[in-house]
Length: 139
Image 1: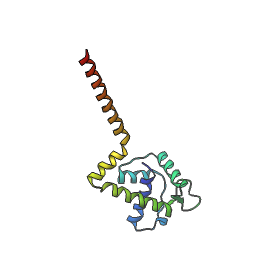
Image 2: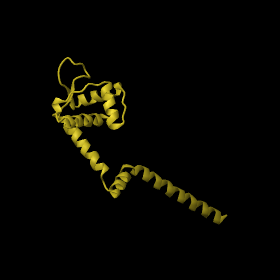
Image 3: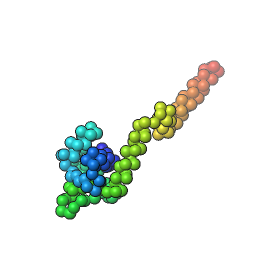
Image 4: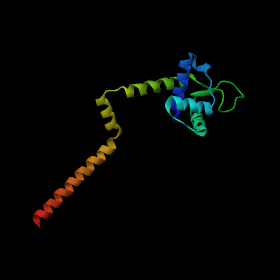
């Protein structure tokens, strides 16, 4: 579970209910945990959700809709948070729908250190084998 899952969830709640982002309120509690589980198969703890909300709040992605509701109640998505959620959701959709060659290329790019290590191990192994063959041929 991360900030983006929460923001996208709130954005999708707005879209499903036909409400603007500044009209949809939510509280951190068991109901939110159940909604996230039903939508994403994620089951964060209340404490984990509170940490995520704190990060979103510090980045100005969430704000309090009204005073006196408590730190984790009466929260709403900001315009900035809506933009982040929309952008992240779009990038995830593009990532899921990319062609096979692009997927392979991205995988190699993401793991190039691993491929470099593997290539080095193969080269060193080949060098050791050739040295051992030369030593046994001379002996």
